[in-house]
Length: 78
Ligand SMILES: [Zn+2]
Image 1 (cartoon, rainbow, N blue to C red):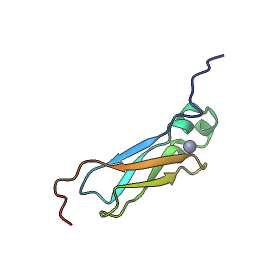
Image 2: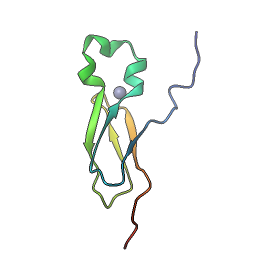
Image 3: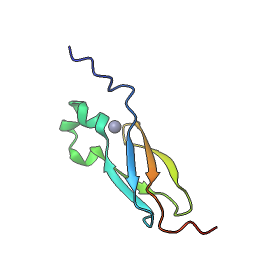
């Protein structure tokens, strides 16, 4: 009945400028009642993004795409 555009909503996990590891939750899995039986552990998304990379792409354990964006850097030395 609720036709929110959750199917096209893009997920983004933000990571600090000096962090190589990121973690977050899959919002699509949170919206889906199924994983409640699997446990919150399944909603958790984590991984690594090399410091020299500003953006990446990951996915939750069920395959939902999640973008990873690095926040503004303190230094931008080349
Ligand atoms: Zn998911």
